[in-house]
Amino acid sequence: MKVGIIRFPGSNCDRDVFHALKIAGGEPDYVWWNQKDLSDFDAIVIPGGFSYGDYLRAGAIASITPVIEGIKEIVKEEKPVLGICNGAQILAEVGLVPGIFTNNDNAKFICKQVELKVASTRTPFTSMYKKNEIINMPMAHAEGRYYNEEIEKLHDQDQIVLKFERENPNGSMEAITGVCDETGLICAVMPHPERASETILGSSDGLKFFKGIVNFKS
Image (cartoon, rainbow, N blue to C red; front, side):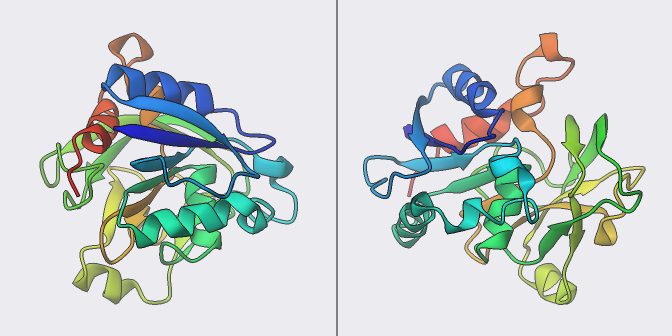
């Protein structure tokens, strides 16, 4: 499974994702923001960071770069796309997943380990978990509060992927911190599975996100 990792000026989790994909048995490679042709890849991951310094708002400038057209073509080919943190913000910005990720309730950057509930297992990325399984991964964002005016539609179509468990640190609607599109092939999550890919990091619960990509069969 050849997986492209998108790099923007300001991305800072690309190497972590590369490492996690290698552990999971994938073949990761980096893709710069100005590359349009992604046809050689079987899947795409947009990592976290601060693309273009989060100017205007998180993901706004990245959303108009050439690589976005390549990602949209990947989507048409029904290949999986995962956005993590800033990557999730970008996917929401371009309308590939529903809703928005906006400023945290307390208007502060929050970096901490959190308990999460896997609300859906129909995505490639969560297919190796059990429904309602509780996992631990870090969150690290200032603009991660999820909001959607059509929340019932998400429930009806099983598009809620991750929810905060026990607490709702950023004030997200219904504690939602990960969603997918209607097909389940495009997934946006604010917590960082790559930072929970080895026990030495405090948790290996996130590794299944990447094993799910590697084991995906279209």
